[in-house]
Image 1 (tube, rainbow, N blue to C red):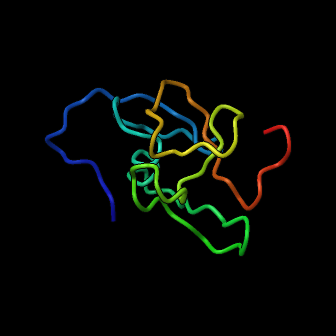
Image 2 (image 1 turned 135 degrees about the horizontal axis):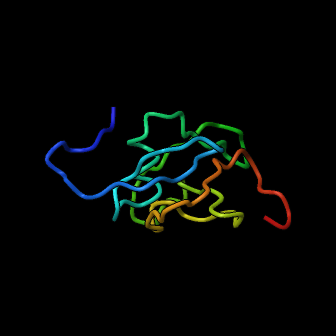
Length: 98
């Protein structure tokens, strides 16, 4: 459903999503990279367990919460990708200390 525009020639970098290597374009946000990856990047709502995807892509709705480099509840739509970044899809409530 989502893909990169072929004419976009920005350099790519590697991030890791739940341990799997994903190519992202420099300047993409984590959420944009996840959506373009083709992976199942749905998180589970902490309240109802309902699957969620990034929605507003501007930091208003909080549907894009992920764990980035061990820090939970990060809004993926506001964080630019960085080489070697480790992203975990949040499944329900986050654990203490993450």
